[in-house]
Length: 323
Image (cartoon, rainbow, N blue to C red; front, side, top):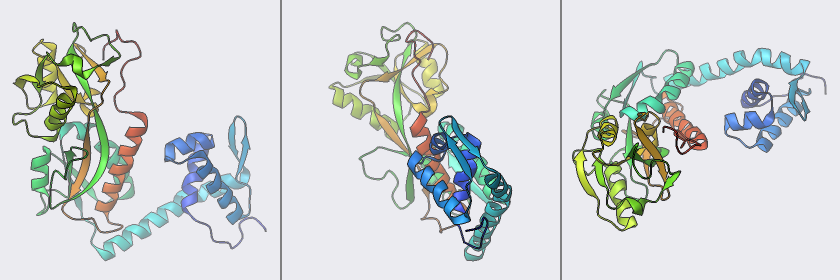
């Protein structure tokens, strides 16, 4: 079969080809795309079969694009751009693409998850504006609909009934909690801390009401460890919590989305029992297929999967280093 015949090929495979060439190997592209190496190899083989030309030279040191592959890549951005434009045009025809998407989010998710999502969404929907509204989960859900917000970042307790009824939610990220200790604490140099060993500590809790998912996760962890915590202080945000811990007013649990910005005068350590909260995205109803809002939700789930693969916060290799 002559190269570049009249066979139709799956344009989605161009994304795989482009990523392999960008990364330099099938395995690196697989990590980037969240595929298996075998799946990437199969996609490239199928594309080569469809176009009737060898696109990559594979070797022990990686891959090298062939002349045919280079020529095909020259058309890739135009082809994929045309497909995206067609999808967006159809979405506008089916349900008008909004001029602006408003996303309500609490601060730690806004700092870690949303920047990646917004960057990709702006590339795919360049005519759609994106506004970020800072709001706790309760307030964010209250904003859904009536032009207050199109989506809201919320937290839930895994295994419990939905936190917010009457809305559509998609899980994004299971957020592990770490213990935050004063730098001179007896466990400050530990790699992992047994939760039951903290039974006699004074605790700083990051909510004024004590009923939010984060606090329920904390109390469940205490109950499973066999103790009733002595809560001595409550604060409205994790920055204040860390300040109180640094001043020796107690210890606390902080989720990884907030732990990455840990102060230098506290130690953040992993627990042997690893409690988690679930971060999810809520919309008033399931978004229409191929809409900008549906893509926003999809990108959030994809970003959460990537964060799970590599972690947001990692305990330092040296236990004596600053967390």
